[in-house]
Image (cartoon, rainbow, N blue to C red; front, side, top):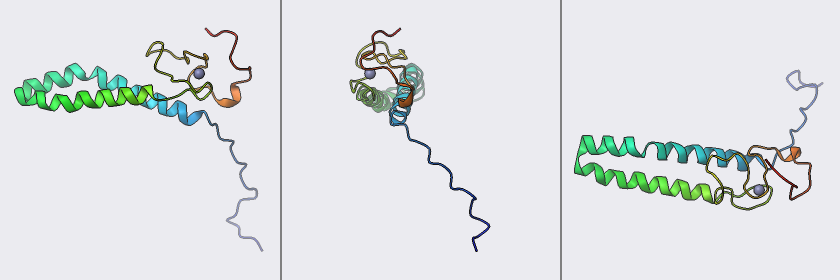
Length: 120
Ligand SMILES: [Zn+2]
């Protein structure tokens, strides 16, 4: 006799989207870079105001962190065309500058051939 705790049916496996981890990583890194660079002036100002010349020494690691995160952003490749996403085009663009795929597009939604004829 089967246990009552077992489900009547096993849940169907959800097909994984191979594009999703790339979009998630790109979105998180881009938000981090934007946040860090938006905080450069306030952080530098507060550290200099509160600590004086010693604050300048603490600003240097913050700026290095900004550069490391920006460098990490430029290393992310488009899951469709495998070219670097952030090395061309605007930082605020919502499309790959090379193939035109919109950021966040699931792999199953890409039905046209590669490369696309035109993109907005
Ligand atoms: Zn692309």
